[in-house]
Length: 321
Ligand SMILES: Cc1cc2nc3c(=O)[nH]c(=O)nc-3n(C[C@H](O)[C@H](O)[C@H](O)COP(=O)(O)O)c2cc1C
Image (cartoon, rainbow, N blue to C red; front, side, top):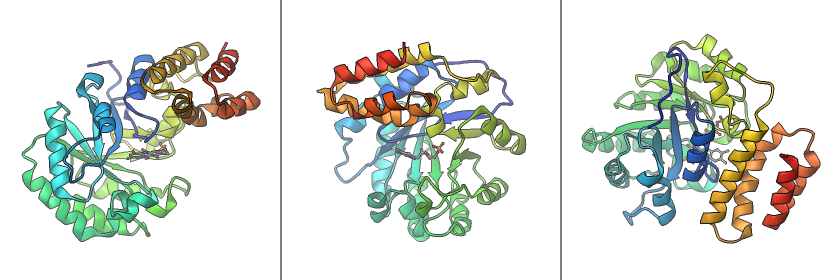
C-alpha cells in the first residue's frame, strides 16, 4: 500500500473511472509516476446472468495488478442478484469498497435501464438497493456514483431520499442529468442541496481541471471531504500531486511525462497485439494530453493520424525530446 503524509485538512482526491482510459495499466503507471490520489476507480464491470467476469473484466480487477486498499471496482447493473454475486466475488478478491454506477449517460446503457437510465425508475432503484443491502452482510462498503436524474434535475430530490434509506459509504455526485452528457454546465445548486441533505458523505465530481479549481471548491465546501477528478487529471497527471504538495507549477515536467508515456506504451505493446490496438489506446490519451502542447498542433495531428507504431514513436520522441 502506498502511504504518503499530506495535510489532513486537504480534500481527498479520487481518480475517476474512464472506460477506455483508466484501465489497470494506466492506474498503476499513474500511481508509480505521479499519484497524489487517495483512491482510483475502475471503469464499470457489468455482472450478468452468466455469473462470470469476462477475461477483460477480470484482468482489470485482478488483485495481483491492483492495490485493494486504493482501488475501487465499479459495477453497473439493474439486477440485485447480479449485484450481490459481483459483491461476493469482488470482496473475495480483497477489495474493501465497490462502487455502483448510476451515472453513465450512454444511450445503449440507458436503454437497458442501467447507469443514469435507472434513475428514471425510482421504485426499481429503491427495490434493488433494498435487496442488495438486505443481503450484503457487511462484506464490503458500497458507494454510489450518480447523476441528478435522467430528464430533469428535480428528479434528484426523490433519488436522494432513496439513497438516504441505505448505508451508502460515499455518494459521488456528478451534478448533471443524463441528457447533459459531459457538456452542459454543472448544476451546482443540486450539489449544495446534497451537502445539506445526504446522509452519506458526498464527493464532488465535475470539470475540475486546475489547482485553482480545487482551491476554489475547497474554500466554499469545508464539509466535503473528497473530489473525484477525471479528464482534468488525465490531461495533467501532476494535478493531484501539485495540490497535495502545495506546489502548483506553470507547466508539467516533460521528462517525467516522457517516462510515463514510454512506460504506458511499452506495456500496451506487451499486452495488445499489432500496431492498431496500441495506437488506438495511445491516441485516446492524446485526446486529453494535447492541451499541454498548445504550440505542437501539427505534430499532435500527425500523432492522431499515425497508422504505424514506428511513425508514432518517431513523432512522440521528436516532440518530447
Ligand atoms: C470516455 C469516458 C469514459 C467514462 N467512463 C466511465 C465509467 O466507466 N464509469 C463512470 O462512473 N464514469 C465514467 N465516466 C465519467 C467520469 O468518471 C466523470 O464522471 C466525468 O468525466 C466527469 O468528471 P470530470 O469533469 O472530472 O472529467 C467516463 C467519462 C468519459 C469522458
